[in-house]
Length: 528
Image 1 (cartoon, rainbow, N blue to C red):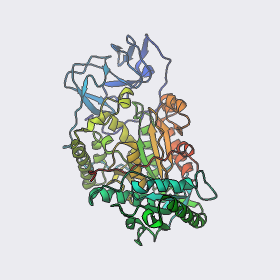
Image 2 (cartoon, rainbow, N blue to C red; image 1 turned 120 degrees about the vertical axis):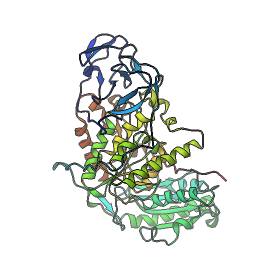
Image 3 (cartoon, one colour; image 1 turned 180 degrees about the horizontal axis):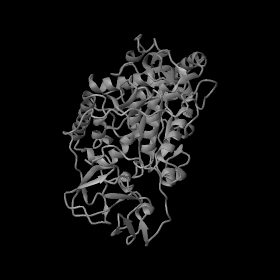
Image 4 (cartoon, rainbow, N blue to C red; image 1 turned 90 degrees about the horizontal axis):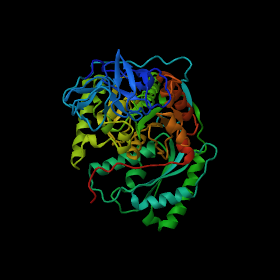
């Protein structure tokens, strides 16, 4: 551990032209995130032989350093800790000289899950500046939650009814009229072949979460008629379903096959439209915005630009009374100590460690380790191991207290910063946080991602200007401007906060415009 357990905020720095040789100050060609760090991050491709000045020393680069990758600032002896973000990210496998490339070839994982501090810090959110919005235009539901969209959802209970659900929604393809944002199908490959236990319970919790999500105004649930995940779990007269919103149910075997069920389902949708059309946006407090936080296709700039900027936006939203849900348990491993220190109480911090150990055991059943997580693209982008990835990833949650830890797809009822146990696999992760009640998702990416979600708008935040330009059809916000020296992290955070409020009021994201609708419940058990 470094002396400073908090994350420093990178304010601004300049980017020079690409070079092969020469002598420069460290600030011109690299990013130093903390004075405790013994590595710096190349902000552009650096050629072997470049000399950089640092603390009166001349460091000659002994290797070519790709953009986003690390090089040593001083000698690191074998077995000694490597620091980035003022945190330990690993140990040196071999002696590393100043100017050497620091990556997977000479770094080993070093992390201890058993020794943490709990609830020793109680950081409060900042004051919300007077020029930032405190209200948005949303759809108030009967349970008091507020939607940012007004969808009719066609939900499959199993793979057996997924084709029919898609057929019903296809009857309304491209439909957006008045106050209805569209008719969307939620097909999937689960619900049959389950045993009656935790896995089936999790699927039920996930699909109920889709039905109860405040962005959904009306629902048609379609089953086959003989699956384990029967329609009675959703269309019965329970207090959490029909008493809160209109829900219609139908079974293919009873209705008479695929064509008849599609026709009957389409008619039910038309009937629901008469009700849903009557709902209107009203001015609501920002405290009703619950943002899910996710990242995918990360690079070394994720923890320098987009993630800390989104963390600033998270702090602002929490200051306004709202909440954020930090997901992807494998990408908290290695950084959980930052959150346990900020837990509202020791029990919450210990629950986080329990959830991480549970995931570690789950992965181990299949021969995987937590360091199996960084994808090849992550490593090409400069991320060496899961600890480095996690230290950058948790920045999305901001700097306030950890107020709660919940299971996958569990309904989120707390305010502030909440952790949800999900895999790092993006479609499954965002499905869980949407099922938990998030009405907006913010998604950071450095290598590029095109993912979206059927009922929740996904706001894409690029970590660097290159990917923002290359994938402009997919990107909503360019946090690469931090890297370019055009703005600071707090300034970009305020921009993201304002963008969230606009999206909550109806502004469409790039993923919505493109029609991305990835939906994937998490199956954890055996197929029977």
